[in-house]
Length: 554
Image 1: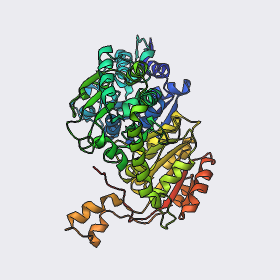
Image 2: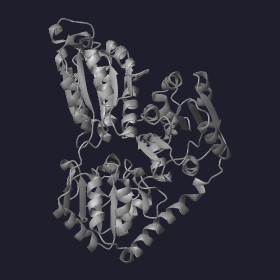
Image 3: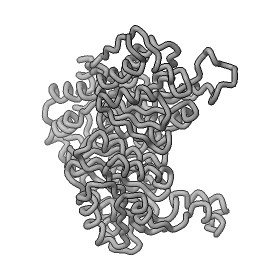
């Protein structure tokens, strides 16, 4: 006999959970038990950032991140799972909920929140009896890490999950096979491997599009080995940006909407596109224009539902990316000579892109150009840095202008929710405390969850946050100008501009280090100082409000 709290804490420890991110009060007795196992209980200022922290932790660690909220905050936690759902990140959410014996009586915080989790989770259940805690936890982990990963939700009876105080005959064993991703690595059919190689052999201008599935499968080495063996240029999605170093001779850049024009050009000149671990969604393909419909294509994915969903495939391989790339590489000959011209063409496109943007990448203009920030980050981040990037202009600037330099650098990107990056970076740092973690966001993104600066200070989560501060959300400029008849008006401008705020001073007031940068030459010293600080740092970079990220080119 044991309490639900003891069983739950023992199981979380058994699955390798080191941190939980939560807004009290939830599973109070479990929190006490977790302390005995040395699990860090990170109390945040909001449910959404708690979910974002768990998401950043999961993507960095390759195992589930755990977040929690009581019943009244459950809906906010569900909203925070949307990004993890879109990015296939294994986040497990625990919430309090109504006990069935109290349903319909007007009990405190009585709202049925479980349906809110249905569209953003792979597994969604409620625990009404303490005896069901162990099997609910095992299934949550199993669902979160199996196949294409994703969030899971368990609702515990009681607005604070008080069912954890009850005792029962519980068996808290854990299935270690489902403690991390990928849990299972399905092997490719040898016939499909042979068919894919036949197509690759016959192609004169093939290109690989590496998606987030390559990252999840930890298949970067296998990806690079195959590309080198067959001399095939590699383009990535935003989620797959760190699967090949941006400085590699076969790396072209990110394709799609938040992209690099060179990558889109190379994809649209290819006579064969090899999608690996990519759902071929609108962002990766710029609304299915990159590549153009009808191109000869091969697809590899652990999720059969996405194979052929947007592009007809000549060969579909439903298998693990790492196992498939390794099998292809093992059976392939070396094709360097016959593709030297195609490789050179891809390199010329990258060189032309760099030359086109060089004056902004190396600009000494004041206010600072955002491209210069990206160039400084590319040049001076440590070889083992993890970069966490917001959506919107932050995603556009970094997706196109920033390059990873080494295989050891990680790149985590927001799947669509502005404000995600800062709390996600805190979670990533918890997962990798000995590595530098640098967040890139704008002032519009930082405003969402700025209170979490205090969380970082309180728990000693020492990230560096670089803020592209132009006192605006200027990505909206074109849309509002269009809405106002095609011209910029004072009232239209008020719809996307903010008060000029010194975030460095604000950070100092919350106990962090703040550095204000107003000249390009001060960027590198600011980064060096911040990375050496051993405390949370906000680098507030004053940038040009008129600087707009380049739009996608088809």
